Image 1 (cartoon, rainbow, N blue to C red):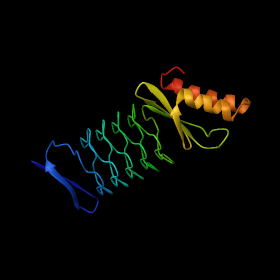
Image 2 (cartoon, helix red, strand yellow; image 1 turned 90 degrees about the horizontal axis):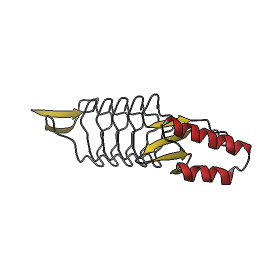
Image 3 (cartoon, one colour; image 1 turned 120 degrees about the horizontal axis):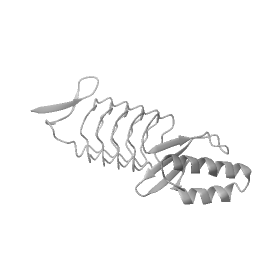
Image 4 (spheres, one colour; image 1 turned 30 degrees about the vertical axis):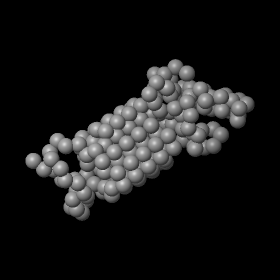
Length: 188
């Protein structure tokens, strides 16, 4: 039995046997595609245009989404465990209830993304020194922190904060980062 992935206009973007897993759709335009509940385990979607796509409840475990355009995409309830989202544009994406455990969000743009109840990531802020949001992600065996364009381990981040802000405001900032890491059940 064949399945088809169509965009909102009904244009067929992918066709394959039922139960097949999309493995290589790199550089494809899946803009507005309805991939809700799709099994995309290990899929290679690097550089794909998934703008406004519906990926709710999709299984994206171990998928490569590096440099993918996911602006405004609905990724709610999706399983992104171990997915590579480095350099992905997640601006305004809905990641509510998504599982981002061990996902790589290095240099990903999550500006305005809905992270309500997302697992494996904590948003905090606005940060006292810049007014921006910060993010703590449980990645493999360590915690990674994104603060603006900074991306580093928890230890590297705390050291950097102490160097850049050696005052009471810096100590409060470091405390906020530590508390966020603890909420991921990781002791700093």
